[in-house]
Length: 529
Image (cartoon, rainbow, N blue to C red; front, side, top):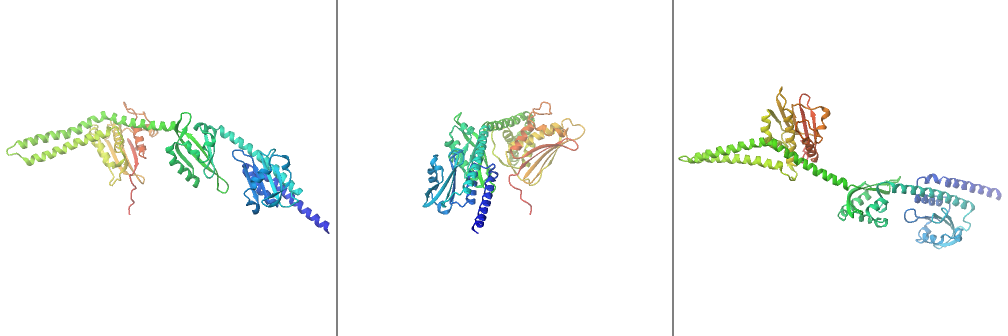
């Protein structure tokens, strides 16, 4: 009876061994694409679950940093703070240590079974420990050996993959870096280190702030820490030290987190791109646009001279007439003091009119920055019309105004917005100069547009344009007028875009064209109750 029972036990043991071997053989499928640390962790967890062991310990040599050590032990041993250090000390590379041996570990008498994960101990060490005196059995020794060999092959492939990836990263023509889930920098590629002139250890951890201009550190660090906390994409523009010129250059730094299947951040990967030349080009472009805007205002001076003279002539003529009348009234016998007072008031009124014309002229051609203010586009358009009304009359233009009531103000540069209106009115007048078969009608309309914006439309019934030319007209130096420079509409669009608005043109269904622009209101428009 003992022999059949023993035979059944042997069969069950053999079946269990075969099942465990199958599990060990399938481990490479779970390790595919995994990092060396993950491979070792799965190995330790699988062996601990599969065999009745007191502990399983694995250590792999450094691939890019410190060695990785993973321990899985029963509670009595897991609380020992020196277990990993003891094992490392016991299993140095000598022939006597690599056979099963009994040892005292944290007061427990254990059998230790060490295995190499590779040809050398630098590749890795696997140690299994058990209280049983007969450990390891033949089947246990077979399972541990097969598992160690499988892990050694997987680690070799993972390290080869890491080396290939490392070479690719170092070959990429860009500055790259990575960080741990808690935001500690753990890698910078050679291009970034060469750019900044630092050794790797000098910028690891929190020392990455050495790369930044001291004035940029206080605003950059909180942004990075907030992204680390929330997992939000990281993007900042900072001045980064450039060793070749011993100065700081503007760079844009981006980073995104890599998540595992449970949604936990595994790593941060980032780039640094030098944008200094682009930023300088943008500043130069803005300066050039400012110069073009100034040139456009100055170029209209000749066209406005006649209108200005006309506007000034009327109040000045009134001043002369009223002054002469006042003298006659005062010279009468008796003097007409009441009448003289009235003529003096009219003289002051005409003088103020002349002063207003001068002020508008000086504001239009002043070469200075004007702070944004609340602008009523109805009033702004009326002031422009006061400057160019004489020119419109001379060209026999019939002016129609359709200004919306209670139009909310917009926030912007009053003079620049008036410059746009002036340019559109001048273009409309020029477009109707050759019209002889119909009235030369010019409509200026203001209205509420999309929620939170105001639209201004300048509509003429002149020669118009082809629909396919709608965008060409806004290209700098493109003109359809004899003697034109082709910068008025281009500058006008730049002005409107700087006010977060839009400027466009459409041909009318009958004659002429409509030029429209919209700009945001200074404050939200309240809804009707």
